Image 1: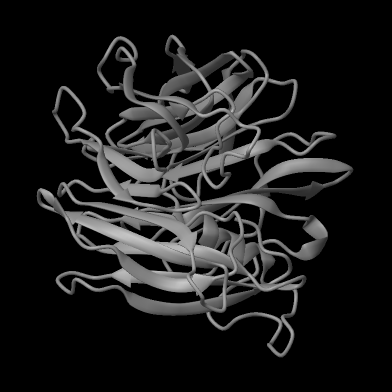
Image 2: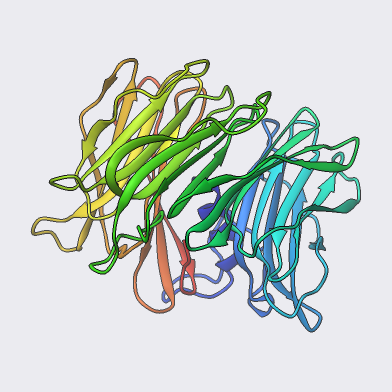
Amino acid sequence: MRVLPILAAILTTAAVPVAGASATTPGTQVLGAPELQPADPDLAIAPSGAQVIAFTGRSDSGFAVLARSRARAGGPWSPSVRVSPVARTRPAGPAVAIDPRGAAVVMWRTPDEPVRSAVRRSAGAEWTRLSVADGPAGFESPAVALTEGTATAAWVDGRGSARHARRAVLDVAAGAWRVSAPLAVDGATALSVGGDGTVAAVWAGPDAGGPGVDATADATPGPVGASRHAPAAAGWEAPVKLTDAGSNPSADVADDGSTIAGWKDVVGTPVNRAALRPAGSAGWSPPEDIGGGLFGPSVAVNGRGEALVAWLGPNDGGPAPFDVFARRRRGDAWEATVRLDAVDAGGSNALVDLDDLGNGFVAVLDPEGPGSATVRDFVWTRPAPAPADAGGLAVGGDGER
């Protein structure tokens, strides 16, 4: 899920006034005051509308992971709860998930310490800290899902050529994580965890740009690889090479295990490409050209077999340097590319999501200079084929994607 962290970022930065605007945007609530120095938010929403947000911030004389929750959309938020120990350095992550019963899990890593988690077994219950795994330093692309009392987590650790995708599973009632054998990955890696526990890894390397970071002139795009770990499987599948040279990997797994991989292909003329793997399928579909862009694609898939891809490309003669583009797949065919808006978004990727009702969402943070930014978001609703501009939401402070 990639739209939700942007929404959480709005909530944690909306306390700083935007020139010519009120201190808080109507309809938002400040979850992390500026003195907390909140950062790295992640937000999880249950089908009932119950929500948990986790972010890092100041606590006592150091930094910690903080969490807040509410029982329904639009309802009051609980006070902040510190779910991690206080550390001298800011923890990496966090990633958060919630299930329909209100159980929740938060995962993070403090430098030079193991990967850790905090678990809430039901709505309103106390948070319990659990160690997830030791291992090499590093904590990139963390992702977690929680369904029917089972949490599945994934992250990347290691450095350089010794990088690995990790997977761990928690039976919430038992209170102990089980860690799978690692998967060697080469380069920037995108991870996603589906509601059924399927984990997908897509990587491009070495030295290729990750999501939101375009490969520079000094970077060397490499083969794009992909692998999955099914919930009942003994280990990761044998990696599959999707192309000989690419960068900017992206991945998404639907709740039924359907998977999409996206990347910027640089074999010949650079073009964004995507490959699909329906639930129950033994292999990936042939990669398909989606459209050109300066920055690699963000991808989403749902359990209906639909997909949505968004990216930033050059604006030809317009007032802003970039355009936001999107393309949707229904059935067996991709619809025409849609230009959504012109933005000054620099290196900020578009973030996308696609629910099982077929509603699609695209959001991008559009910086407007020091002190302000606007999140532009667009929504496809069934059965209308064209996206509707849901309006820009101004946020105070220098926005972070």
